[in-house]
Image 1 (spheres, rainbow, N blue to C red):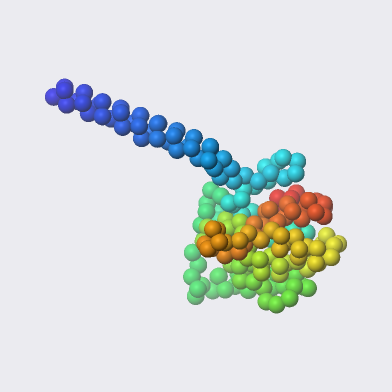
Image 2: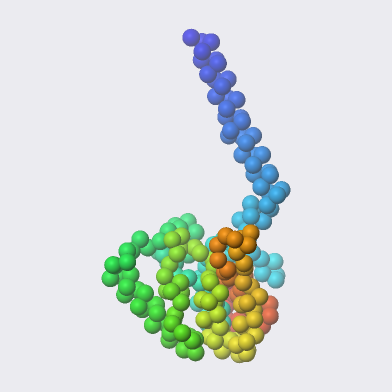
Amino acid sequence: MWNEIIIALRVTIVTLLLTGIAYPVAVTGAAHLLFGSQAGGSLVNDDQGHIVGSDLIGQSFANPSYFWSRPSAAGENGYDATASGGSNLGATSKKLHDRIAADVARMQETNPSAKGPVPIELVTTSASGLDPHLSPAAALWQVPRVAAARGVAAERVRLTVENMVEGRDLGLLGEPRVNVLRLNLALDRQFGRAPTTRAGG
């Protein structure tokens, strides 16, 4: 019986060392070596070297001088990376309809010079609540507000958006998109930081 116990302990220890220590260390080391930025959280720095967010996690922007992200249902106040998730409200939900109607009215009020209807993604949450991207169309719709708030020509802001459009992965996967955080940092680099707020807020 003791032989069986010793054999079992040896197998347990070897398995623990291989799968609990050696394998995670090897994979983590390879990830940092081959994909250092992604393994570190895809963190984004401003021009002063301060971390202002992540490429992968959306955040709220309320200042009219910045492009606004998709709404978020992640956590009590939204954009909570520890509570990723959607609202789980269905298409027949009156609460969802009322919330979207209020958001459409707010977007129209705060973007009076925008042309066309409010893009749907600006009033609906993503499944994760942390989508860091907008479609180029949803970003371009906000150009008149951002340009007016910054006192610059709309065409200059439009060009900034177009320069920040990311193509499909490998030329095939996904859709063209704009990372909102990186777009707002590009605005600050080109036109200066907006008053009374941070580039990330």
